[in-house]
Every structure is written in C-alpha cells, then in structure tokens.
Length: 83
Image (tube, rainbow, N blue to C red; front, side, top):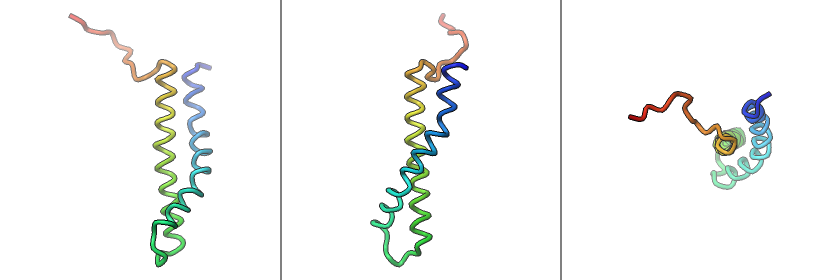
C-alpha cells in the first residue's frame, strides 16, 4: 500500500473523530449566540451544521498539509514545456 493511499484512507476516520468532538462545542456556541425563542431543534441543528462545516474545513486543511508534506502537493505529472 502506497504512502499516499494510507494518507487518503485515514481522512474519513479523522473527519468523524473531529466531528464528534466539535458537535458539543458548536451546539453550546449556537445556544449562546441565539435568542431563546428559537426551538431546541433549530438551535441544535444549527450547531450540528456549524460543526460539520468547521470540521470539513479543518480536515481539508490538515489533509492538504499532509499531502504537501508527503510531496504530493498538486504537482502535474506531465512534462514541462520550457522553450
């Protein structure tokens, strides 16, 4: 198994772990900044949605940095056409 494949395969597990850790903090944050007249479901759903987007951005950033560090940072495999 190549190193690149191992880095890619841990991405979803890392995403799930970070998401589970981020949900309570995000829900708490949403409860603090929203008005009490909103329903419990709206506030909790907003917190979970916020956690999902923050986690997606965070794991994308970490994965990109790991790819760059491993030397697979978006380099083209074609030949350079220097004239």
